[in-house]
Image 1 (cartoon, helix red, strand yellow):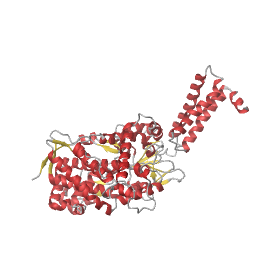
Image 2: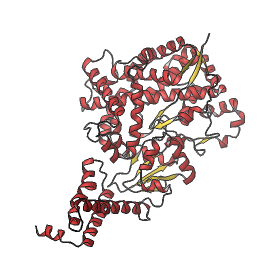
Image 3: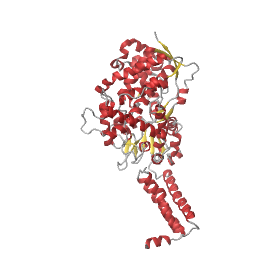
Image 4: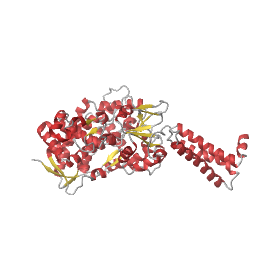
Length: 559
């Protein structure tokens, strides 16, 4: 009571200084914690100034006046302190260049990401500022190849707070891809590793072959122009539902009658925004009408997973391994964990692979010489071109796929990592990054750096992946000076790297090789008359996964 009487008897000046001091103290709390929980934020941003209003009531004409004055003083102090610190030489990242607005707040990148061109923005920043750019108050972007292994290799960094924003904290069981704790991630990944082992992949060949044949047969029935973006997307979605849940969709037959593809893509727009500002994402996801597409797609994926669990499967599909129906795991995932991974199975297995295949179709049609060379190689193998074992050793096929993945990796801007608090910091290349810093490598920029890939780093050139003898045979003018040819495999990471890399990488290679070989055998393809190829990259949107425009193609069955 004495303390309360003392506080309420403070002078106006002392009362205001107390509010200012509280604002500075709150900034200190934010500097040392990563709270995204709305309740905690409400206490710090709303609760404290409401309580402090009692100091100014006696000096104001009304409670409302005191409340407004307190909030202005508290928030003004907090904002001023934050901005001043982030721009000051005392900040741990002060020496790194970058746009002023990025140093002040991540809200700028959050809103910019809604345009879907953040991969282009990052590329421009690196051209302007160099290999290491400060793109957030506590975040750095690295373009140099020597950052890859320290950041993402076997002893690399855990995932960053980007994933806290994409997945609400009230979800007690998060999908494997969103787990930031390394130990937890390793445990959850084990059944996925079994599901994509060599033996397991052999069991998926029949499912994949049937869906590939269905697509080319369906395309053969189409008249006039077909949108390859749509049809390859339908194929990938149907195949992944077969693989994950033993069926459930027939988009190639019926179209997207339930709007599932739209839901999947629309969900990513919300998610990319919330990933940049996790505290805001955690708040928005609690609002009933916010991110309806994101919530609807997650609900659909969980429904599919639950249905698959109940009905079982006649063959060993993906969920057979995730649920551990063979009983081989000593610590199998819970039903809730498996169900939570339903959406991951669909998005990671369908969207990214369909993107890679469609991009290759685009590049081949834009480069007639490469198209003819690949088709000739496939024809040379004859029926063996549809043999999975033979496809892995077709040099031009794999060179073309690698080149497409280099120019347009399905995840254009990479995946954020974080130097955890208490770790003491991390050496990344020649830079020592302090703890509490988020870092990432924009794959799009890294893959087009002339120090990593030459000649013509921005051109589609499958020959760069061939032997030097074959390069000189096919493109002597470009490759005659072998000393200037650069192929830095340490800078080629379309499937990421290390413990958090794409667990389904080998399955993706099977899909890409089989479908490309089958389509090239069955059809001659060309762009629709009047189509401007430059529109492909102009229409492309980066929402962590890539959203693509239409790809109008005319197919002619081959004799």
